[in-house]
Length: 146
Image (cartoon, rainbow, N blue to C red):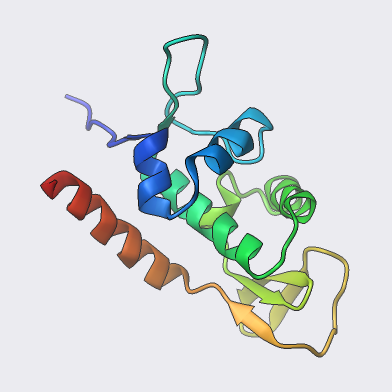
């Protein structure tokens, strides 16, 4: 018997990821971040998000909060999918926001600019993926307990 995959409605995803429902809806409609379990397919149907999708939504929200534009997010996601082969790039990549640039951290010596502005000496903000996973798991547990 196959293992069932836990999934979440768009409303649950919004609450868990800390992103406005309207934002998640817009991102899905514009194919920025689409739910991997089920996309809406007409009136009355519901988008369903996986745990990895929740991570991607949170990471996108954190990048937006530090000033990364939606256009830049789209550029990064496309690059990561096509050039790095990452299926779910925002939940599978180590990213560092440096000013208006975001770099992919492949290892401690190899950083790849995702927005073509390497070497800019400005304040940096590192997305702590481990912390994000722990927080999302906690929110999922809280949702289950409610």
